[in-house]
Image (cartoon, rainbow, N blue to C red):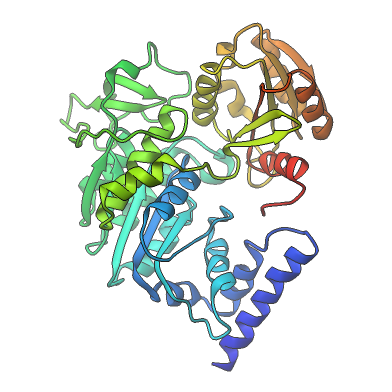
Length: 427
């Protein structure tokens, strides 16, 4: 008991020290220290959730979906709100909110979990005896130098999900790799997806990540695609096809078809957790985006909308969403730090050619010249600014009051943009 008290006291001190001296939010280091001293601390926290644990994983949409789920649920909820989704970030979320003896009173734990962290976490929950819901959104190429190919992650997920008989899986039927996980797991499985043929892409995007059958390796056929490889699919060789889904009428509170998926996933979880439809409708009608995910910040009558874009699929869907708003100016910020991945060759899979010729594009970030060269190939009106603060100022100078500057940053760049605009860090 004394050891645990000292451990938590030390971790809490690190959290408050980080906040006090503005060197981050303390979203990771408290958990890092706690895990080194007690490897079982996370499961001890999870066992204290009265109703259960909800895990959200996927390449894109984790933060938005976990935030939406947290607000839809009834009762008290603990979540890794900072978006720190490695094991140390999950533990930190509990450290921040627990007593000195490690006690925490909460109904639900909603955890946004990194793709590589999910296979590390699930074995700890095989015997978990309360409600365990695992939401898997999608798999796209992202940070190849860290994660590897999509197939590699899918295989690791498949192995970790094979023996989860007490869990409920909420799977995206429109993503072949995700949907197939339901066929190989002994968990209870429910699928979600979209039935909107009018939104099928006219042609396949360049950034397509999973066009081969996850069961037999044959090339899939698509009746229609909503984004990247997400759509209505089937394999003519082994017969594997998109699972049947229930039609729905839920309206997404955020722009873009990708957020329709996030909304449907969140609602599916809420219904599974016993939330009534009236509450769901009410919460969705007032839902505000998570930081950096269509977050809007007002600056002297002008708006800055930040839309995190960290891989080809995310960039393309955000560009499509922005273009529908008739933008005047875009700011694209490319960094190559640890949260972003050092390999930036993926920018050549982004369809920057879709940007209208009358839109001004400003580029900045650690890899400003790489991004500048890529966009120059698309022959856009381009402005290069090495200094991010100057880039933001230039973007704001290009618009008038009431107009919006759209910012497309990678992850670490998004944190920098927010710090410049709001004066504090998230992580």
